[in-house]
Image 1: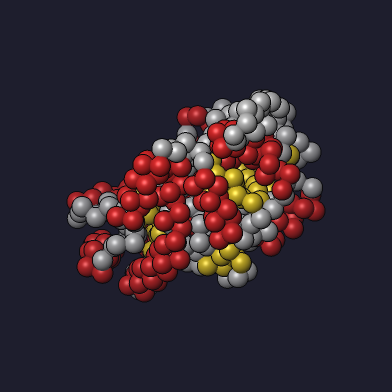
Image 2: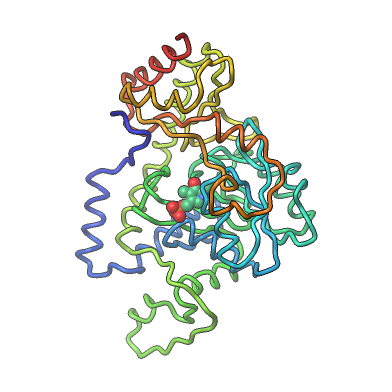
Length: 375
Ligand SMILES: *Cc1c(COP(=O)(O)O)cnc(C)c1O
């Protein structure tokens, strides 16, 4: 079976993890500090705060912005459900905005359409690694005086306007889950430019402590920490950060390989009627963390039938990106019409794409799709 995704991990990552274990320092320590600094520098941000996941990163971002009960947070329904859940964690109401068909992302217009006097934040996703229009949406949010949190869970290594995603973001949240491009097992980060916020986020991830556990252990004198506010345990471990440092060194190569495979998919599928593969937007370059294709009537087969036929042919594909407003957890949520979201989630599927995918495997995926299109 050709998997839909496979993390690209090797002997180097295993050794790095083993060294962390042998050092005796396995919780958050020097490797986490090095990883968050290296990652922030890679994405063009002043500061990085390593965390246990992107879900906890989104939660902390809203805590840092002071979002709470009575507030509305605009999110896309078309996203992994963690994006909408983050608003609920702080007692706020997620308000779903529709996306554009081409990128699967929020736009200034779709956000503006659901904006109210209670809107206190927008979480916009760089969906599947396809960047939203950073210049347009950041400027619009600034003019509305509504902070923009960028859910860049899938987007490490993507660019917009020739700058890495993360560069210029108020707060960007990242994931290092194995389903994303680089992985630390589980893991996440926030990147940002404001130093005072970074210091507070580092406290919040560690129970609100005034002195980090790592600094206390390093000190030769007794250090008495204070607990300044209600914090969380959202720390990454040094074992994870050791793996992350190796993965970060491979990120450029991984993105280049994914872009090459995506281009080959697009070329091989270009003459199939009724099937539109995801592509770069005019203003940026995607890392193609998810390579989706959108079907229409001309293809002649429904999405679920295509998924089933691919499975029979030994290809593990996935339904397209989910829509939170269609899930039981959000059945009671107020929602405006989301026609593009519903079309994308119903008619798209994600094809296998990973670093070690071979041309033969790719041909097998394409061959199956072509046969289905003809039949
Ligand atoms: C995967 C994902 C998340 C959650 O990331 P975790 O690190 O698994 O918590 C959040 N948002 C989006 C858009 C994602 O794809």
